[in-house]
Image (cartoon, rainbow, N blue to C red; front, side, top):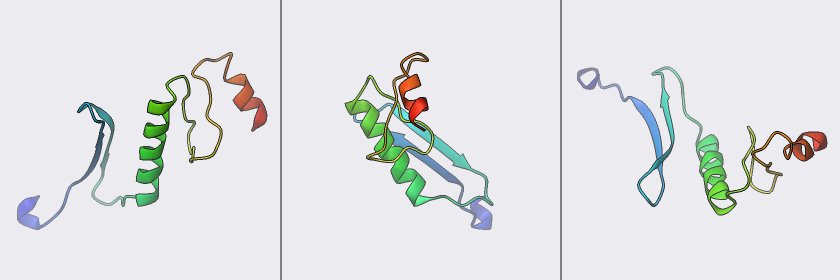
Length: 80
């Protein structure tokens, strides 16, 4: 692709220990969203600070997270 001047698109978020926590590889015709990248980074930071919680799809800082257990997650799902 270099000879055509085309940039391949990928995003890798690596934690302090050097572990890849998130990766995204986009097709050439698909753009990337800075807002989604920031949301993903904030969610990763949140679950590292709150290991007994998970962030549902579309989660944003300040919104409710949920427990990573089918029975305990009922509280989250009953509120939406």
